[in-house]
Length: 80
Image (cartoon, rainbow, N blue to C red):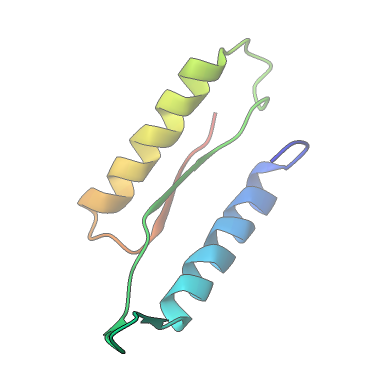
C-alpha cells in the first residue's frame, strides 16, 4: 500500500481480519465455512535505512509466522 504509515497499515490489516471473521463463505453445496487469516505487517521507510523489496517481504513473512505461531487468526507486525 503506497504511502501507508505503519499505524494505518495495522488498522487496515485489523479491518481485513475483522471482515473475514464476520463473513460466512457458502459453497455450492450449501456448506458454510468460517475461515481465519493470519496477517504480517511491516512498512518502509521508518528508520531511514535502505531496504530491498526482498528484505521488506522477509520482515512481513516473519511477522506472518509470528501470527501463526501465536495461535493464528491475528495480526502481527514487524516495525522497522
